[in-house]
Length: 437
Image (cartoon, rainbow, N blue to C red; front, side):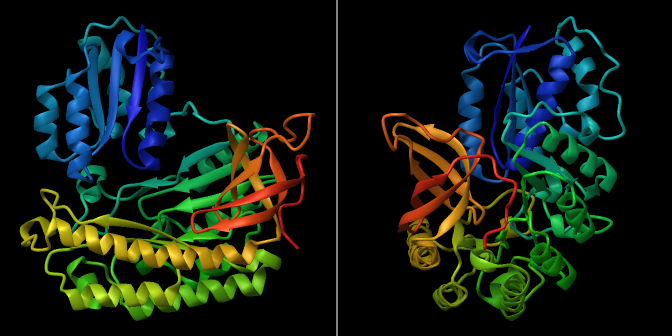
């Protein structure tokens, strides 16, 4: 029995697919890359944006094998998916997969292997041997007025610290070089995200720590200080602002002010300058924002532009608002035209392009740590500790490539652009030290 999974959406969905894959293989299925020649096709989907739903439906209608759909799905979308699939299951009900498959006519083995209290206790089949996602929690209690996650994921549930640390230790022992701690809002992890971060940081080994996503309302001074003190935690931090106007934040049900957000950014930057050395003092701050939210005036958008110019983000992810059924915002009049939304998106991206370039200029002619992720034509592609994408020439002489995928290297930056760096290789061996002097 052959299976194939396609995943849409965020890192959490990708992590869920890893657990589905391992569950299927424990039940006797084998993965197969040719999706048109499989017995079972699984779509792990996301209802966050309508454009994604349209793509998923188009894909589902082309699938000839048995099709199951899971993921973050609104009730409205479940009805549509139900007509074009052989079944829908909630990822939280992963332990019911054997019964679902039996009902579809599959002869499976090890039907009792998936018994657990929660689906996150199911062991994943990691896609990468370099980077691993570790969900520390699932669900969301925030109910931002535009977001469907609380309706599709349910209330927040946190995994025990010991389980997360145990999973991280195994990954590091198996050679994983970068760990992502995942949650819809890692700041609200119970009992304490700062405590968890410190325990993962204290694991022996040569690896980096990243995490996502964070909410400004739950970001404490303890978390900021711990993040800066934990040397394996990379100096990259995503903190979604969504809007730079207080009235828009209130309409979005984001319970913080622009002033409070700026204070958090200032505190974060000060903490890194206090506890880090060299380039590590420069923390790369990224953000998310929504343009064209219902009722947003031109003046309110100008406030967002002004906020972006003042904060000087190193990265930014801008979305055009689209209504999702069931949310509070869906009942508001979507009165900003699609043309205006596109225009606003470009204006914010232009600001980010400038501030990103200014941030990257700090790295010109400097030696930095790089994790090599892939090779494309004549370049190795990697990520820096500040999450910049970096290119390193693969062939420096007739001897051929001098570094390997999945390896930490040291490189000297020779060129900077808004969304990437180029560098020359200095050292291509697995290093023990992670801090930059």
